[in-house]
Image (cartoon, rainbow, N blue to C red; front, side, top):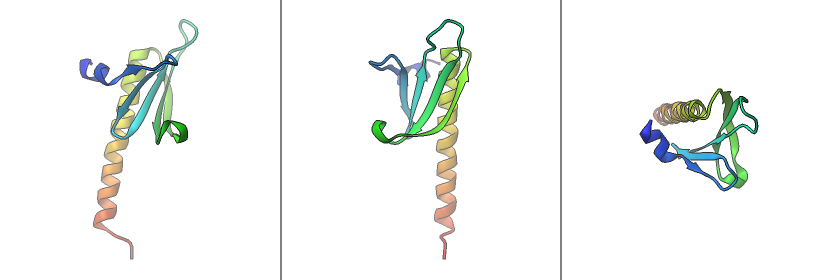
Length: 91
């Protein structure tokens, strides 16, 4: 978990953020105690980012882990997809 925590930083607006595999991960702490923690996986610049995935978890640590896993899977999927299209160009 230490390596995971090393990539996360606290933003001025209070969200936790990380850049992993070309994706921006955002975890928003709940405003009320006991509420679910929202996470987002984004692609693109902050001003023109697209939501690639999102979800909720019971706590901040779980949200960070789930967002990181989602980004890792998307990175592998993109590499696999790119390799497949590079090996089989369209006619």
